[in-house]
Amino acid sequence: MMLGALGFQYIGELPPCKMCYWQRYPHVAAVGIGVLAFVLPGVGLTALLYLGAVAALVTAGIGVYHTGVERGFWEGPTTCTSGPIGGLTPEQLMEQIMGAPLVRCDEVPWELFTLSMASWNAIISFALAGLWIAAARSKP
Image 1 (tube, rainbow, N blue to C red):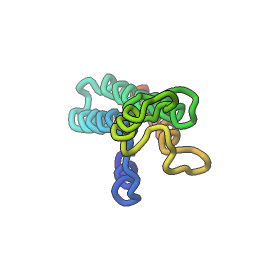
Image 2: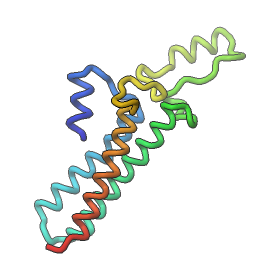
Image 3: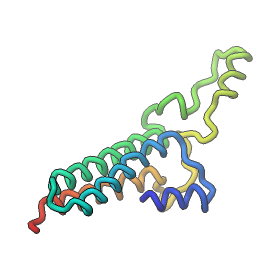
Image 4: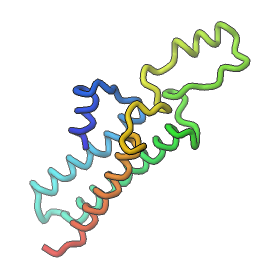
């Protein structure tokens, strides 16, 4: 997932928004957990595998939240979305323009089959959580 995100960022020239970065942190944690589970087999392996599932579920949840922001189902953080401009003075409007994020969280820069990257992250991350759980429940 991280290689895909970095590919879109650097090869596809699609810079991530703030919420996209939020979705990356649990993926990085899951990679670290996976490395620990591989390097320290048997040492709390089941707990590490469930922890990996938690990391995948966290990023899936953030992906669902981000999708809702992109689709206008709910408001996103004010630090990465635009706000209403009605009733603003010219000075306040200029301040809002100058303080606007370069990449907004409430816009969809890329879609595949009408799903944004945040939506795909959520779907794939739920599947990855299932794999982590299946691995934790499997008998060695």
